[in-house]
Structures are given as C-alpha cells and as structure tokens.
Length: 135
Image (cartoon, rainbow, N blue to C red; front, top):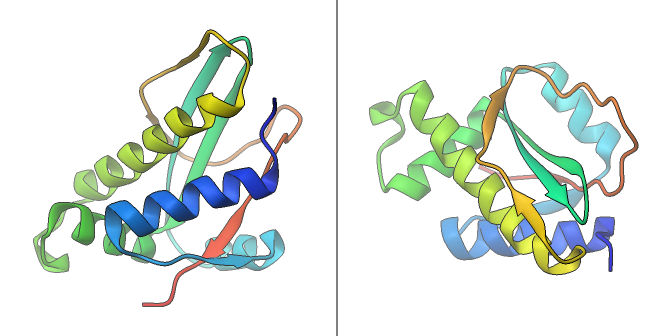
C-alpha cells in the first residue's frame, strides 16, 4: 500500500475535525502556497523510516495554528504563546503520521515532530494535500 493525496486529505481532515472540531476545506496547492507566502507560518516535520522512508511536513499560517492551538488547549487566543502553536501543530502532525502508518509497508517507524523553518523539498513528493480554514 502507499499514500495517495486523497488518502492524506482524508486523514488530515478527519484528525482536524475529530480532535479540534475544525472543518478543513480542500484547496489547490497553488492557492495555499500563495496564502502562506503572504503570512508567517508554523511548520513541523515528522520522519518516517523503515519499510518507507520519507518526511511528513505540515505547514499552517500562524492564524490557522492559533485556531488549532486554541481548540486543542481550550484556551483563549490571547493566552497562547508561540510554543503552544508549535506544540499543537506538532501533535497534529504526529497523529497524521501515525494514521498514515496503516497505509505504509510494515515496520515503518515515526519520529517525534521537529520544528522546521521552511518547507524545502529535496525529494519526490509522494502525496500532497492543501486546505483552507474559514475563521
């Protein structure tokens, strides 16, 4: 089995809906890239190794990260710090990677999330999913 863009979209959408009660709308990658280029972003990476080797990168604008953290921690936006945004996105990325393991070959290991400054792709993109969030 492998990961498709549709599979990735379903996993991410389900996690955000069930964990945060936030509904993501599918979008074109170019639309999201343009939005991220205009704003600060929070980005994390989770390494996958073993039967499949790759990196899951999750990027969100600061405003979407703030909504996610507020929902995850049941906190008011003005009570959150930059680390809270990073922690919320890291947990979401880790949940996503864990769910994707079911679609990957046996003995696939998932690392802890790490903060990244930019999404610089050095390898082949296996699957991609872009979303917008009203709010």
